[in-house]
Length: 306
Image (cartoon, rainbow, N blue to C red):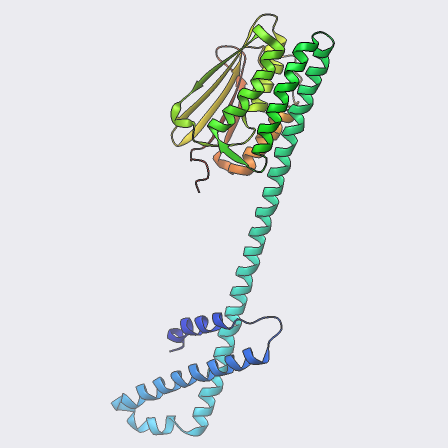
């Protein structure tokens, strides 16, 4: 009987949950609930015994006041035990929910911090390039400042967004590339190989800019002749694959082992791990065609899609 009554007791207790400070009215509700469930249990037990022909003689003895009192006290204890169990379960559930919410807030805060690291990173690098260019070509430096202001305006438009569509990310990247083309002029060639189906895919904002900046800084800038940066986006097996490749020296042997990627690449990798956990891949390797290739694989989904 108590096994059958337990779900109803839990539902009743959910309407009048226990708290650290037990209020008088709530205690009265639980006394009423205990009395009601005890009455139901005792009534059913006595009726079942009375309906059993082979114990008809024991039925009258079973319902003596003394045994009824014993059954009532036992039922009150059982109700109190069920009440305690429900309290422990609900308390643990609330604690787990608070922990999950706190972990989510910490993750969001860390993601925002990582994202904010990228903005001054490319800003300082661009201002440094403009400062160097001012000494040689003031007019070109002024054009770079104008394009930088446009780039910062785009950054503010998506300041709060952790993810944007690939189309929006490419628009931001185009504004950044205008600055670099002004700087390098004919020395920089950018080749886009973007599948049309990938344009509405969700990507972390400011994902491609540090990858392209790394390709230009460590690939194109180190070449005496024209440099090439290839940006590719494809959909493969439920994943969005992004590649940024340059035709620079690649991972040269004179680089000391143990030295990790710069701020841009390291921050990008940390953001991917925070956003997608084990569902992402971030690879840096020499390309078969020469130069360095950075590959990012993230789950395929549309922006703002759960």
